[in-house]
Length: 167
Length: 269
Image (cartoon, rainbow over all chains, first blue to last red; front, side):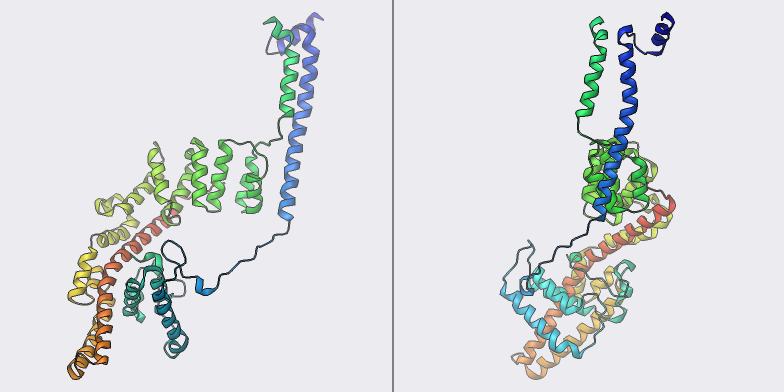
């Protein structure tokens, strides 16, 4: 008995009285068995949840599209009812639909001059938009790509002319 | 002390019960996250980090920041990096990859990221080089090309030359001679084409005014078209200066974002 008590005292980190030693021993065994089992159960539970989530069918929501005439926005992002914008867009639409077909179909720029003018007018107003559109028309020739950096040329060898680059 | 020792079994029992009763929260499995990241399993990765009950601490925010670096989202990456604390800033690979992304791909939050890096001290040399590259792009006129690596000096010097050009001077030159502003910027072919197209339109309007008079409808239309073309070259030269500056800046940053990973490759997971 005395030897056992001596051994227990050497094994324990803190000084514990003899009466509580069996309880603590049982507690330690319980912890050693219970904790890994609960951790493994957590992992299994999580793995099952991950599998269920991944195997669920994916539903894609339907896109709502506004009519085309409502897509004209101003700088603040609000729909604008500027009559000059509608007039100029209408004239350019007439040109694109009936006149443009008789000219060349391969443009040097990604956004064609007429489409670019229409977008610039809707975004920046009639005067600035017209000037930007006509400026692109002035620079619309086959070897214009040599004046631009490689970064501005798309994969299908057209000059990238985004509206965000305008000053 | 004696009462504590005598009741130690009761105390241990209460502690164990409190641990068992608390909600089931798993520890983060780093090997599993590494496996998900290396094999690009985005759905599982997203579900594991955001929808399973994991311990909410800096480590989780660090792994979320890594997730938003692998599947890019600049603003969410920034928020998680800031909440991850020192963990994120000790991972040099994360800082390097994020800086490369912010240099070229993530343009909206560029300044936020590099301002955040400026506040940190003792960053690795590779990150300091990237900071220098970005500073050169922001303030090219006060940076010497010799401060940058050899491969980037040509792009930077081109960008520096264009930054020294004045947009109002380009517009003024175009007003004097249509297209001269384009030559001043560096667009030689645009100058030639613009000049000759302006010449043709001007000649057309001059001839119509000479033969038909200026009160004729055809002359008025010709004069109107010529004036629109003339004003567009002036405004175009002004706008093109900024456009070319932006293009050359993007070219320089693109080369930098390709050069640095090739020189010092690293893997996130």
